[in-house]
Amino acid sequence: MLRIGEIAKKFDISNRTLRYWEEEGIISSIRTENGYRFYDDENAVRIKQIILLRKLRMPIADIERVFISDGYDIAIDALTSHLEKLKQEAIVITSLSTVLEKLIRQIKAGKNLNQVFLYLEKQSKTIDSEIEKALQIVLSERKNNMSVNQLSDVRIVRLPGMTIASYRAESETPEKDCSNVMNKFILENSLHKKSGFRHFGFNNPSPSENNPVYGYEIWVSIPEDFNVPKPLEKKQFEGGLYASITTKMGEIGERWQQLYSWVKNNDKYDVDFSFQWLEECSDFETFISSDESAQQLDLLEPIKLR
Image 1 (cartoon, rainbow, N blue to C red):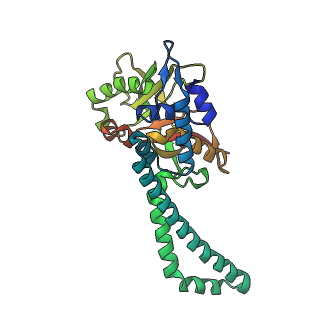
Image 2 (cartoon, rainbow, N blue to C red; image 1 turned 45 degrees about the horizontal axis):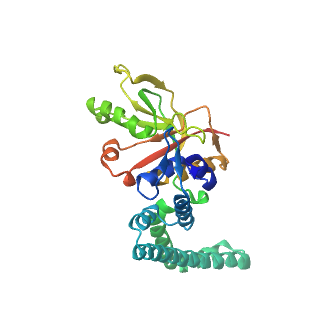
Image 3 (cartoon, one colour; image 1 turned 30 degrees about the vertical axis):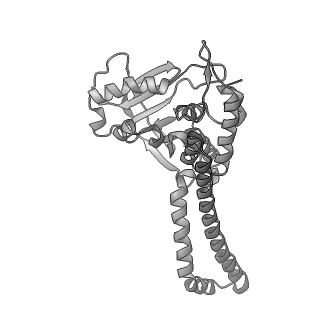
């Protein structure tokens, strides 16, 4: 039997990802009277299997379908479909590599850029066709591509300063408990319909191996003169510069790791630990009405120029 923190450390995944898989019914845990969450050997094996499939770049939705259905035919269908997509991608990459190899040979042989462009002109239809195929595959698989080196969807944004209403919950399910209070406040005051509405959340405190109970805090923007009732608090957010990517709930732990690695390996930016890391719900009405597997968040990591 291993605690959630021990499993997270062993397999290098986040506690939140484990809880998401549990909520989706892929794995299950045993909870003790003091609130600790343990995974038995069977669920530890299941977690390892999920991670192995993720390393093969298999979409999380297909992995969920395989384990929830627990059917041989479903597993074969999902794996076969993923294999075909990878084969298609390999063909396109091979074709583009061939064009690039010929282009390099042209440059080395002729040392004449005009000749190179003549070659490209003759090959333009082939190149356009291959690039179009590659683009379609990249777009369709973009959400499943978990390679740090291929994070092409990072945006640099500057959040403005704003007045916010804040609420924090500390429990076994802090995201849910915090959202219940804050959603009621938002809907009762129609805050989500006001111009410039923003909705952020973050761990406070973050879960740790020795702390089975942790917290989550939500901020929502409000007019400066708005009266905030207890137990909510009124605060000022300074704003700042952030690197941002979008994530589905089932990939949030992996995506945070990738964004952090992207920033740390960036020549222009570095992590700014003096500001709060944030998870933004950019479409509140859709978010609260959607199935959790379809919900999206923007991850915002504070950065500064090197």
